[in-house]
Image 1 (cartoon, rainbow, N blue to C red):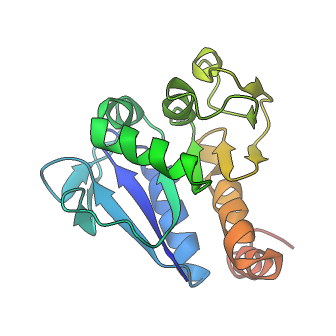
Image 2 (cartoon, rainbow, N blue to C red):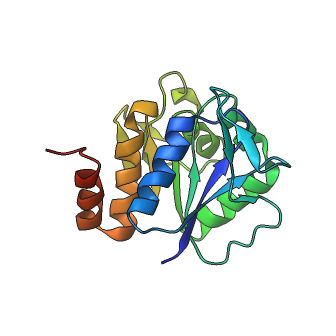
Length: 183
């Protein structure tokens, strides 16, 4: 199975980042956290330090499943301002690669024009940044190879959508059941 990469910037939303990593790993999906800072330790929006698996440089993404952006502020802003990540996202999208963003982070995709003609959702107040998208306000929106999520409370549903797309519905249901997300 290909590796997915979740990008961390100072001020990321901890629940969105760690829930996704935890659930993908429960599903047996390889996922690496990547700091876009010069340090592996990155502080979240609520001052929780997280040690990333790797730094952005050098990053060789030849066998990639998902590029995942957690929200949070100013984390999503920092992700959007990081030129190497902008280029990576644009190139990955051009190859129909899988991209997922939650909360404020779908604005990064909107700013890059990657949501044109697609349904998308985000944290309330960021709708205007989803350039070219059909904003739905749904919990999770799946539009071909791009998944967007609404916010922190939807992190598990967002992660399950990623699992479902890559590992299948049965695996997503297994993870949800194991976490008691379903009766």
